[in-house]
Length: 268
Image (tube, rainbow, N blue to C red):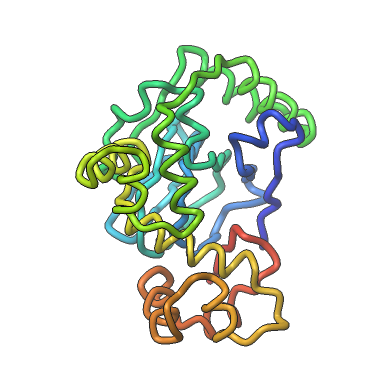
């Protein structure tokens, strides 16, 4: 089974949200197992009548016969995670762009970034709104309700240093160059980066290069060309980073997962 990954219909939300997917009861989810690979998004996973249990490299979603609501936030896993569903679940997962969720939840940095899948309840009406979405049978209506909900929330300005730092990284500048251009110390840059983005600049850039390679893979270029175009130093560097983030070589990874979309899951 492959997920339908929905991009926001609303152009305003497209600036903040990469996309989202749904799993619905018995039709989907039961017996599903897949690997998900590191990314730089802030991910909200909302489940009804189910429980998430997290070990070092595995997430188990267990169906519950008792009424239950669970919402979790993760932004800092840097190795592949095996996600396993034991029984049918209702799930909604939203991928926010690196600074996207901060614009809706100004106290986001206070959540425990040292723990993957920290409990997340950002607004007084969050549980009620998500439950209503789960109980809406039509997918188009669910999407409309989801987008209406986030559009109803206030948008806050983030610290201007953060988009400036991300812009410098996208331009290929190293941390020292970015810090100097912003007239801040490298230590301060690293500290606010970890606080607001959940990982170090080195981890963020490594994942960014990996995701760029996945996004731009079109089958026409060799893996060597792809690695160089994605800002890896050489072929050995390309292979080493892929193995650290996926446990697979680039050739095996692309052979198993395909490369038709940026958000790739490896079903097992």
